[in-house]
Structures are given as structure tokens and as C-alpha cells.
Amino acid sequence: KKGRELRAAIASGEVDIVVGTHALLSNGMSFKDLGLLTIDEEQRFGVNQKERLKLICNCVDVLTLSATPIPRTLQMSLSGIRDTSTIRSPPPMRKPTISYVQEFDEMLIKDAIERELAREGQCYYVVPRISQLTEANEMLERICPSLRVIQAHGRMARGTAEDNVASFAEGNFDVLLATTVIENGVDIPRVNTIIIQNAQAFGMSTLYQLRGRVGRSDLQAYAYFFHKNDAITEQSAMRLQAMADLTELGSGFDVANRDLEIRGAGSLLGTEQSGMAAKVGFDLYMRMLKKSIRQLRGLDLPVVPRSNVILPAGEGSIEAVTEVIGEDETYLIPESYIPDAKERVRQEGAARLAESTQSLVEITNSWRGTNGPLPAELQNNLKALHLHTCLRQLGIDVVGLDESTGDCILRSPGLRPRHWAMICSQLPRGAPPKGLDVLFPARFSFTKDDTEITGGKKIDLEELLINPNYSDEEEEWDALDEEEVEAMKEISSAVNIKSLSEIEISNYPRFVVKKLGKSVKEGSRVDALLKVLLPPSKVVFEKQQRDKEKAKVAAELREKRELIAKQKKEQEKLGARRMGYTSY
Image (cartoon, rainbow, N blue to C red; front, side):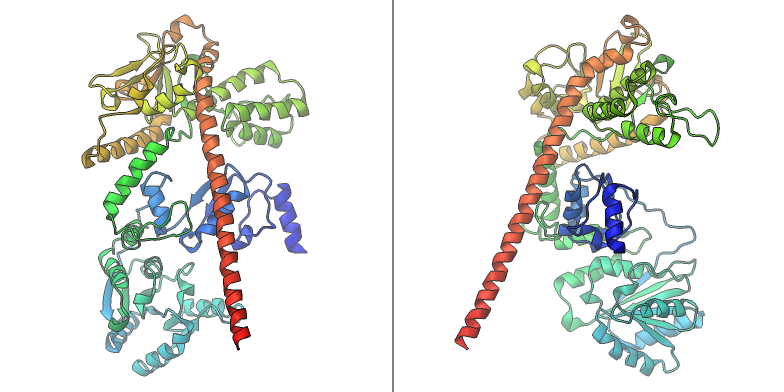
């Protein structure tokens, strides 16, 4: 009953944040307006589970957190399909864990435990299977008779494992003998030695997570990876070698990268989370993948979370100003239109987050239906929001006036000739909007000089789509990767720019609306910008929506094929079993 009530509250939108396990994947779950999906410990989820979450609701932003992402996820980040950021700064006073990879040796285990106990510490002893706990316990009692050992594993009675770990944390025992249940969520600073038996049986992510259980104080920590020579394979040997090599703090990304090289990247469109890329080699495989993605994704403009409009008199700005500290002050909606403060803030938040001008129109139409006609002040403010929506769609991070010429400059660091060619091909007459020029510096151009594409004039789309500056040479594609990274850096710092004079604007791709500062009177510049920016931004949004719909359909078809294949396999097994019974 409690579960039904909770599911109903989630479906109706009464609950804002849902924290759950795999139960959120069940078919009985529905969400009113799911906007953000955060997956912690991403390496512990399967592809089918993550794809199911994304299919629950359209337009879901997905944030995955992992110390060691699975090869498939890491490859999607490295190849540009997903954005990634890494945190490499360790907490203060931490030291890298010293790691040893050895063949199983009882005397080495005894020395390691006695050394830790001599400095009044504690130890973890980890085995891969529950069935091996009894044997390991007997071995520890034999080599160290006075040792106080307590166990923890997943098949204990409810609450027993947690109680045992808590008792160990209080210092009542010397060694915690456990399976991988301690892989996550255990933080005991006094434990600075971990011994892993049969390490060849663990995956690289698990080994890294287990090693992270120690070294959580300013004391030197030690990790021992013991293996059996007769059970080791080529891949397990490579995993253990990686654990011995990659010992620096914050090396989880490097560990995941090595895992990607060892196991391969799996299938981007299927369900395999790893797979061999050895046939062509990892580096060549990644280069081929990046080139293919660039050819397929014509409108892969970088995401601009926030555009900085620095026109005179604050025109086009949507910055909210709080006059009284501690009180909410909304910029967009007058208090007289929506008196309730919380509802006003909520509605403004929805308007600010609108991903297209069409979505913004739908939101304002709902306001009309609930609160009546829009006041003039609100209509003017909405124009600025429409402008910012267009700017984000076109990858524009900074807008300002050139004081010498009066031209309006709109910087778009990630814009490339191929992007503009594809956008213009979808516009009326295949020409860019009149009054909106585009300038590309020489390094992004298809000529040796800066290239200017004049608005209102037809352009040679083929010439823009094929850029001879980038051939199959390795160095040139590396340079292209570096340019994309630099573009994202510029976008992230754009909010701090106060004037166009602070940046060397000639170094960046940019849109130009000539004489906007001189020929258009103050108060009408937002209207003038919207006139030229709305058509291309609409093209970008519609293309992105089509791509999302195709991806959704492809995912649904893939799930259906997998279900049919699974049912067919089960039927074949059932048939074989019946045949066996008949023959008997």
C-alpha cells in the first residue's frame, strides 16, 4: 500500500526528487515531468537499465557519476557523444596507496597484517566468493592465532552485515573478512591495509574501488593483490598490471581508460558494455569513430548553458537583481500578474529553462489561460528570454556592440562552416537570413584567409561542407579535437566577460549584425536580433528533435528485437527439454 501511494505521488508530480534503486526501472513507474536523471556508481548498472530510464520520459538530462566508468560509457565520452568532466584533486593530506601484486603467499599475508596491527591499525581481507570465506577464516586463524576476525557478506540475515561492519569500525576486531559488499560506502580511516585474495577473479573497476577503501586518512596505506598463477589469464594479468602501475590519487579515469584498452568499447547502439577493438587497434578505432561522428552529426554545436548579453542599457539581459537580501526577486513576471511568490518563481524557472521558442510560447499560453492577458512589462521581458533561447541554440555565448563600427557581434566559439552550411540548406532559398553575416577565422575556413558569408546571398553549400583543411592525417584530426576543447573552455568563461574589448574577437567564429548600435534605436535591438536569429535557431531545434525521435525509435526497436530474440531462445530451450522428456 505504501509503495502504491508513493508511485502515485511520483506520477502526479507531488514529489520533486526521487531517490531510489533499480525499483525506479519497473514498468509500473511513471513520472509527470522527469527532467534530470542522476546515476551514482554508474558502473554497477547495465545498459538495458540505463536505456530504460531514458525511455521513461523525453528530453531527460542524464548525469552519471563513477570513479571508473564502464568501457562503453567512457568511449562515448572520449568520442564526443557525451560530455565529461573529471575531478582529480584528492582531499588534503592523502597519500597514494602503495600496491603490491604477488602470487598467493601466506607468510606475506601474515607480515602485512602484523605490520598494520603494530601501528594500531586494522585490515580488510577480501575474497571473491562467499564459499571461500570459511577457508580464508581458517587460514587467518592458523597464521595469526590471536587475530580477531569478523565477517560481512551479502547472504547474512538482515542487518547482520551492517552490524558487523559497525562493530569492526568501533575497533572491536582486527580484520574484516568480507566479499565485495564493502566495495562502496565503507569509510573507516583506521583501516589502511587491504588484502585481496584471488585478485585475478575481480574486474578492474572492483579492484580500484576496493583499493579505495584504504588510504582515507593521512597514514600510508597498502593494498595487496594476491593471485594464483594457474588461474590467471591474459586479461586478468593486464588488469593486475594496471593496478600496480596506476597508483596515483585520482587515477580512476586512467584505470577506466586502461580497462577500455583491454576489453574494448562494446557496442554504442547495442547492449554490450565492453568488446574487443583489437582488430584495428584502440587508437585507430577511436580516430575512425570520431571522424564518423563528425560526418553524421552535422549540427553538433556545443551546448551553451548561459549566454552573456552585454548590450547598452542592459538590453536583452535576463539577470535577476535581488534588492533585499534573503528575499526572492524575479526579473520576469510582475507580482501583480502572479501574486504567489513560490508559484511566480516556479513559473519563471520553467520559462528560463525552455529549450526552444516554441516551448516558451506554450508556457506563456498556459499563463494566459490561468492568469489572463500578459501585461506589457511581461511581454517585453519575454522577448529577452526568446533571444537567449535562440542564442543557446546557435552556440552563441557572448553578445555585444563594437563601439567603433556599431556592429553587433555574437561570438559562437564552436560554430564551423559545415554547421552553417547545414543550417542554411534548411532555410528558404537556401540562403542565410538577410542582415546576419558570419565570419570564420582562417584556421576554420576553407581558404587561407578569413571567410565572410553575407546574409541574404546564396552560398555554395558543397564548398562549406567539405573542408580540405582536415584530411586523414593524424595530426590534423588531433588539432581539430584540441579546437573543440578550447571552444568549450571559452564558453565556460564567457559569463565573466564585461566588454568585447576584453577578448580578441577576431580569433573566433562569430555572427555580425551590421550597424545595429547606430541604425536601430535603443529598446528595439532585441526585436532586430530576434528577426534574424529565429529562423536559423528553429532549424537547429527541429533537427535536434528529429535526431532525438530517431534515437528513441531505434532504442524501442532494439528492445523489441532483444525481447524477441530472448523469447525465441527460451522457446528453443523449452523445445529441447520437451524432446529430452519425450525420448526418455
